[in-house]
Image 1 (spheres, rainbow, N blue to C red):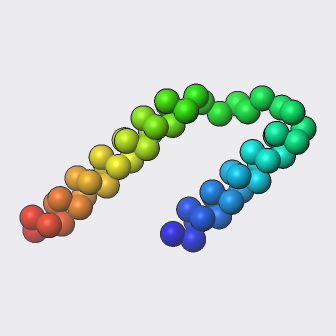
Image 2: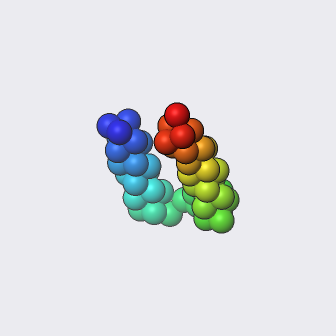
Amino acid sequence: MKAYLISLAVGIGVGVIYNLVDVKSPAPPTIALVGLLGMLAGEHLISYVKTLLA
């Protein structure tokens, strides 16, 4: 969990710097990030269901 928080904090920091310098972020569009979030949720959901059934 600590690694996720560090990653989030660094990402927010870089986003602030990009905004201050007025640079366009090379990140994919929001819709792609939502899709990636869905993929991760699905991956964890299968592991969770397997644990419940075991």
